[in-house]
Amino acid sequence: MAYGPLRTHFTSRKRITIDAGLCVGCKLCMRCCPLGKVIGYDADARRAYVDDALVCGGCGACLRICPANAVHMEEELVKGALSPRMVLVIAPGQHRATP
Ligand code: SF4
Ligand code: SF4
Image (cartoon, rainbow, N blue to C red):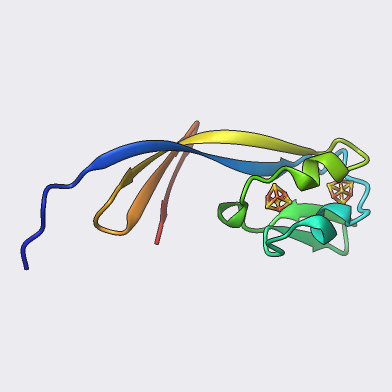
């Protein structure tokens, strides 16, 4: 099978972080998220946590609704190749491959 030349492109992607020290466990962020899978809840610690940051669409609803200012948004540079189906996420101290 023949492949054309790989074309590399850069883009940015937003993702959230949750400061467990500030979170008061109200779950408002989970309830307002339109994607539903991004934020989890630790019942023992009574704190929200980021379950799957790669699913986050970056809409910012959880930031705006959080009463404790515990949700923060990071923007990371993403280097992607159109083929094969893999993106390399470049962030300080992190390297992650996604399907
Ligand atoms: S930024 Fe939007 S999509 Fe991402 S976790 Fe918050 S509410 Fe969900
Ligand atoms: S909205 Fe803020 S305080 Fe409430 S669970 Fe989410 S991160 Fe914690």
